[in-house]
Amino acid sequence: MKRIMDLVISLTLLILLSPVILFTAILVRLKMGAPVLFKQQRPGKGSNPFHLYKFRTMANLKDKQGNLLSDQARLTTAGQFLRKYSLDELPQLINVVKGDMSLVGPRPLLMEYLPLYTEEQMLRHNVRPGITGWAQVNGRNAITWEEKFNMDTWYVKNQSIFLDFKILILTVLKVVKKEGITQQGHVTIEKFKGTKDVI
Image 1 (cartoon, rainbow, N blue to C red):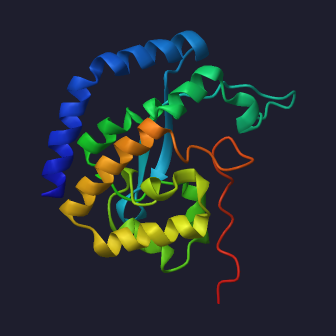
Image 2: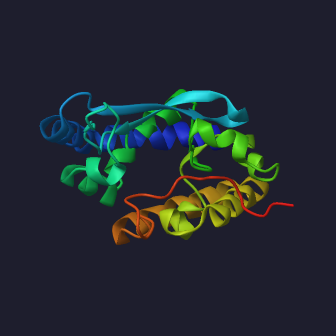
Protein backbone atom coordinates (compact mmCIF):
# COMPACT_ATOMS: atom_id res chain seq x y z
CA MET A 1 0.00 0.00 0.00
CA LYS A 2 2.78 2.44 0.91
CA ARG A 3 4.62 1.86 -2.38
CA ILE A 4 1.40 2.28 -4.37
CA MET A 5 0.63 5.50 -2.49
CA ASP A 6 4.17 6.76 -3.16
CA LEU A 7 3.89 6.09 -6.90
CA VAL A 8 0.41 7.56 -7.34
CA ILE A 9 1.07 10.74 -5.34
CA SER A 10 4.60 11.38 -6.66
CA LEU A 11 3.61 10.89 -10.32
CA THR A 12 0.56 13.12 -9.83
CA LEU A 13 2.69 15.82 -8.18
CA LEU A 14 5.30 15.65 -10.94
CA ILE A 15 2.56 16.32 -13.50
CA LEU A 16 0.73 19.01 -11.53
CA LEU A 17 3.90 20.78 -10.43
CA SER A 18 5.70 20.54 -13.79
CA PRO A 19 5.33 24.33 -14.39
CA VAL A 20 6.80 25.04 -10.94
CA ILE A 21 9.62 22.54 -11.53
CA LEU A 22 10.40 24.14 -14.92
CA PHE A 23 10.36 27.65 -13.40
CA THR A 24 12.68 26.52 -10.60
CA ALA A 25 15.09 24.88 -13.06
CA ILE A 26 15.23 28.10 -15.14
CA LEU A 27 15.77 30.19 -11.99
CA VAL A 28 18.67 28.01 -10.86
CA ARG A 29 20.24 28.04 -14.35
CA LEU A 30 20.02 31.84 -14.58
CA LYS A 31 21.18 32.59 -11.04
CA MET A 32 23.71 29.81 -10.39
CA GLY A 33 24.54 28.35 -13.78
CA ALA A 34 25.02 24.66 -14.54
CA PRO A 35 24.43 22.06 -13.33
CA VAL A 36 20.85 22.77 -12.29
CA LEU A 37 20.58 19.66 -10.13
CA PHE A 38 22.64 18.83 -7.07
CA LYS A 39 23.37 15.09 -6.95
CA GLN A 40 24.84 13.39 -3.90
CA GLN A 41 25.18 9.82 -2.68
CA ARG A 42 23.09 9.12 0.42
CA PRO A 43 22.31 5.92 2.39
CA GLY A 44 18.89 4.43 1.69
CA LYS A 45 17.03 1.39 3.00
CA GLY A 46 19.48 -1.11 4.46
CA SER A 47 22.13 1.65 4.28
CA ASN A 48 22.47 0.96 0.54
CA PRO A 49 23.71 4.09 -1.28
CA PHE A 50 21.69 5.91 -3.91
CA HIS A 51 21.95 9.30 -5.63
CA LEU A 52 19.64 11.94 -4.16
CA TYR A 53 18.51 14.80 -6.42
CA LYS A 54 17.85 18.39 -5.38
CA PHE A 55 17.85 21.75 -7.09
CA ARG A 56 21.11 23.59 -6.40
CA THR A 57 20.94 26.30 -3.76
CA MET A 58 24.66 27.07 -3.42
CA ALA A 59 27.29 28.56 -5.70
CA ASN A 60 30.57 26.71 -6.28
CA LEU A 61 32.71 29.37 -4.60
CA LYS A 62 36.21 28.21 -3.59
CA ASP A 63 39.17 29.68 -1.71
CA LYS A 64 42.67 30.13 -3.15
CA GLN A 65 43.51 26.51 -2.30
CA GLY A 66 40.54 25.24 -4.28
CA ASN A 67 38.45 24.29 -1.24
CA LEU A 68 34.73 25.06 -1.18
CA LEU A 69 33.80 28.00 1.03
CA SER A 70 31.39 27.61 3.95
CA ASP A 71 27.69 26.93 3.33
CA GLN A 72 26.89 30.43 4.56
CA ALA A 73 29.22 32.00 2.00
CA ARG A 74 27.92 29.83 -0.87
CA LEU A 75 24.16 29.99 -0.18
CA THR A 76 22.70 32.35 -2.77
CA THR A 77 19.65 34.62 -2.50
CA ALA A 78 17.86 32.40 -5.00
CA GLY A 79 18.91 29.38 -2.95
CA GLN A 80 17.44 30.91 0.21
CA PHE A 81 14.16 31.42 -1.66
CA LEU A 82 14.12 27.78 -2.84
CA ARG A 83 14.81 26.48 0.68
CA LYS A 84 12.26 28.81 2.23
CA TYR A 85 9.48 27.21 0.17
CA SER A 86 11.13 23.74 -0.05
CA LEU A 87 11.27 24.01 -3.86
CA ASP A 88 14.79 22.56 -3.84
CA GLU A 89 13.30 19.23 -2.68
CA LEU A 90 11.02 18.74 -5.71
CA PRO A 91 13.47 16.58 -7.76
CA GLN A 92 13.29 13.99 -5.00
CA LEU A 93 9.90 13.02 -6.42
CA ILE A 94 12.01 11.30 -9.11
CA ASN A 95 13.80 9.38 -6.34
CA VAL A 96 10.40 8.26 -5.05
CA VAL A 97 9.30 7.05 -8.49
CA LYS A 98 12.59 5.15 -8.87
CA GLY A 99 12.04 3.45 -5.51
CA ASP A 100 15.09 4.98 -3.81
CA MET A 101 12.90 6.97 -1.45
CA SER A 102 9.40 7.21 -0.07
CA LEU A 103 7.26 10.31 0.36
CA VAL A 104 7.44 9.78 4.13
CA GLY A 105 10.34 8.38 6.12
CA PRO A 106 13.54 9.44 7.90
CA ARG A 107 15.45 12.01 5.86
CA PRO A 108 18.46 10.56 3.99
CA LEU A 109 21.58 12.01 5.61
CA LEU A 110 25.27 11.85 4.69
CA MET A 111 27.16 8.61 4.07
CA GLU A 112 29.85 9.81 6.50
CA TYR A 113 27.36 9.66 9.39
CA LEU A 114 26.84 5.88 9.16
CA PRO A 115 29.76 4.89 11.45
CA LEU A 116 28.57 7.43 14.06
CA TYR A 117 25.11 5.95 14.66
CA THR A 118 24.17 3.99 17.75
CA GLU A 119 22.44 0.65 17.25
CA GLU A 120 19.09 2.32 17.99
CA GLN A 121 19.74 5.16 15.55
CA MET A 122 20.57 2.65 12.79
CA LEU A 123 16.91 1.56 12.87
CA ARG A 124 16.16 4.57 10.67
CA HIS A 125 17.65 2.57 7.77
CA ASN A 126 15.10 -0.24 8.15
CA VAL A 127 12.76 1.73 5.88
CA ARG A 128 13.12 3.83 2.73
CA PRO A 129 14.20 7.41 3.48
CA GLY A 130 11.58 10.08 2.87
CA ILE A 131 11.16 13.54 1.40
CA THR A 132 9.47 14.42 4.68
CA GLY A 133 9.16 12.65 7.99
CA TRP A 134 8.05 12.76 11.62
CA ALA A 135 11.13 14.79 12.60
CA GLN A 136 10.48 17.30 9.79
CA VAL A 137 6.97 18.12 11.03
CA ASN A 138 8.21 18.33 14.64
CA GLY A 139 11.03 20.83 14.32
CA ARG A 140 12.95 19.99 11.14
CA ASN A 141 16.39 21.65 11.42
CA ALA A 142 15.50 23.57 14.60
CA ILE A 143 15.81 20.48 16.86
CA THR A 144 18.90 18.60 18.06
CA TRP A 145 20.29 15.56 16.27
CA GLU A 146 19.33 13.31 19.20
CA GLU A 147 15.72 14.57 19.11
CA LYS A 148 15.64 14.04 15.35
CA PHE A 149 16.94 10.46 15.59
CA ASN A 150 14.49 9.66 18.40
CA MET A 151 11.63 10.79 16.16
CA ASP A 152 13.02 8.81 13.21
CA THR A 153 13.18 5.57 15.20
CA TRP A 154 9.73 6.25 16.68
CA TYR A 155 8.37 6.53 13.14
CA VAL A 156 10.02 3.24 12.09
CA LYS A 157 8.38 1.46 15.03
CA ASN A 158 4.96 3.08 14.55
CA GLN A 159 4.64 3.60 10.78
CA SER A 160 1.23 3.27 9.15
CA ILE A 161 -0.63 4.67 6.15
CA PHE A 162 -2.68 6.86 8.49
CA LEU A 163 0.50 8.28 10.07
CA ASP A 164 1.97 8.93 6.60
CA PHE A 165 -1.11 10.91 5.55
CA LYS A 166 -0.94 12.89 8.80
CA ILE A 167 2.73 13.73 8.17
CA LEU A 168 2.03 14.78 4.57
CA ILE A 169 -0.73 17.16 5.71
CA LEU A 170 1.47 18.59 8.50
CA THR A 171 4.31 19.02 5.97
CA VAL A 172 2.14 21.25 3.77
CA LEU A 173 1.29 23.38 6.81
CA LYS A 174 4.97 23.61 7.81
CA VAL A 175 5.99 24.70 4.30
CA VAL A 176 3.29 27.38 4.28
CA LYS A 177 4.45 28.64 7.70
CA LYS A 178 8.15 28.26 6.71
CA GLU A 179 9.04 26.78 10.11
CA GLY A 180 12.26 25.03 11.19
CA ILE A 181 14.21 25.65 7.98
CA THR A 182 17.47 26.47 9.75
CA GLN A 183 19.18 25.83 13.06
CA GLN A 184 20.13 28.89 15.11
CA GLY A 185 23.59 30.05 14.07
CA HIS A 186 23.65 27.92 10.90
CA VAL A 187 22.26 28.28 7.38
CA THR A 188 20.91 24.73 7.65
CA ILE A 189 22.07 22.52 10.54
CA GLU A 190 25.44 21.74 12.09
CA LYS A 191 27.14 18.47 11.18
CA PHE A 192 26.37 15.34 13.20
CA LYS A 193 29.43 14.30 15.23
CA GLY A 194 27.95 11.30 17.05
CA THR A 195 25.68 11.04 20.07
CA LYS A 196 27.43 12.29 23.19
CA ASP A 197 27.63 10.34 26.45
CA VAL A 198 26.36 7.08 24.96
CA ILE A 199 26.84 4.26 27.52
